[in-house]
Length: 139
Image (cartoon, rainbow, N blue to C red):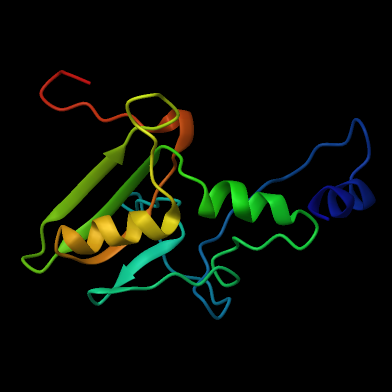
């Protein structure tokens, strides 16, 4: 859909001007500065200490490809999670997977792990082959 939008408005050899904007959930522009950091994450796993997974809202339902939901949400995969506990501490979690000694986590299992660690709020970050944690110089 986005590719079709671009090819309908741009021609080969033309210069494109690309800009970005940070929008809130109502589509309103949010102010940013040089100190603004943005992390792409999703789906949300825990909100206010409770499991909070909303597949359609979080973009996990692909009507044209139902196997995507099964493979990415229900199947166990390597995962990276980030959350905050009741004391305000940031907690990072990695779960290796796709090997004989570590199967990874499903999205539901990821939420349960986050809750079991006492996280009040948690999100899923990138996973798969990107799931690696280095602490004190060791993987």
